[in-house]
Amino acid sequence: MGKVLKRWELQNGLTLEAEDFSYNYYGEYWNIKVMIRGKIEVRSEYLDGLLAEEPYGEEALRRLGGEVEYQREITQVGVPEERLGETIGRLLGYFEENALPYIDHPSFPERFVQKRWREVAKEIRTEKMREELQGKGP
Image (cartoon, rainbow, N blue to C red; front, side):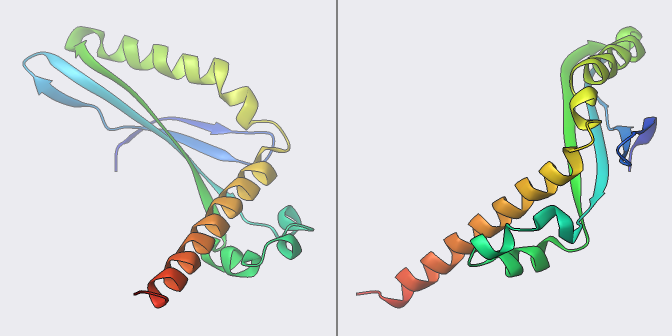
């Protein structure tokens, strides 16, 4: 677990944390790695109307579990040690300016859960197709 650099309590109920996983890779030069994460509760109302449209919808919902994780990795390589704090601050500033308004939108949790649910449903469909194809082998 990295050092928590910043925490955001968003108006849509999400809490995000930025953790520092930066490391020294050579001499006085660092690779910056900041992970921004937050848990989003999977609410049944987020998937109203969608479950019936997908043959593996219920299975996808079970696989999702009670929450999904938003995760974003911000990196920069070859940062001189004396500019480490300044560079991390600048990268977090870019995130706040460009991504945070989108994530803070009231509909973001619902849209994100739906996106993850669709991805899991697609994975299940792919698994089922592979099983069928393997069962019909030569």
